[in-house]
Length: 178
Image 1 (tube, rainbow, N blue to C red):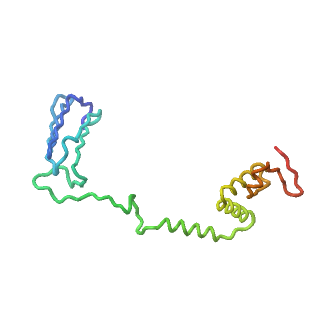
Image 2 (image 1 turned 45 degrees about the vertical axis):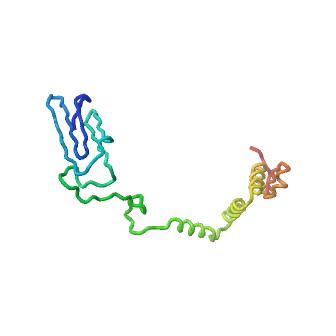
Image 3 (image 1 turned 180 degrees about the vertical axis):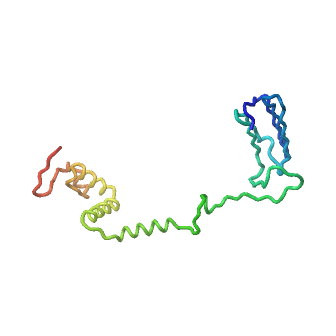
């Protein structure tokens, strides 16, 4: 961490297995850092940035392996190859996997077999007619419901498509436009 270092006062050189950094500190002293790397890097793709709070050095690895440590001498130790886990792309504390597609199918089957009463049963019937219907059935239901103010629901497009659907309130009720 070097604060307020100037770009002209910083020099970093990269080689295959070595990094040299020289920084002239605000006090006038020279700071030199020489690292002999455990593995090789790609010098052409390694960079450094001079920020107000530090000098950031990034060294590009030629292959995606995990280094046990940064510095080292002699032969390269056994490398641990990084292979992403294809089964789990997220951390999990669960000890078993769940088939979510199967769960969705089970829930849909359960909803289909559910016995509803009253208004819920009627609404489900209308939803089923609409979702299972052709485009003409859907068009007829939308037009009849909208033009009648919610008092008529028809699935016959040949009838509804030719005329304006009139308001038809239930018996013993009077329609008032608000």
